[in-house]
Length: 110
Image 1 (cartoon, rainbow, N blue to C red):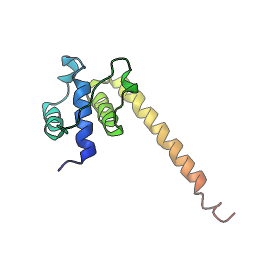
Image 2 (tube, one colour):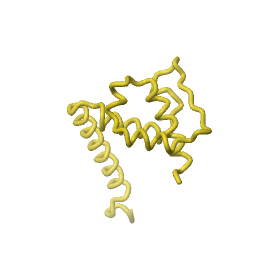
Image 3 (cartoon, helix red, strand yellow):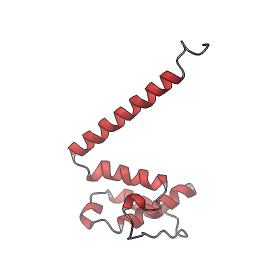
Image 4 (tube, rainbow, N blue to C red):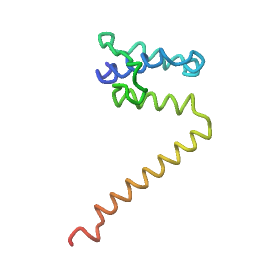
């Protein structure tokens, strides 16, 4: 059984993909699209607001993550993938440095 939040996210993703070019949708493996279709929430109605950019749509975090992964895996160029990987690497370093500063064992008892 699929988590209800994921089922709603699959519904949102499929709705967004309705407005993506057929050429780009065809780059996504059919088994992935079938999975979304089979596991979507058929009772959840999600509509696109055409007065807003995609980033402004009321998409769930899960749907945004799925769409980001679709972009990285199937639509991005190798240069774009490299830039994304570098951005993620820098973000992880920043998070780890913040943790190190907050939980530095040399400063725990000061």
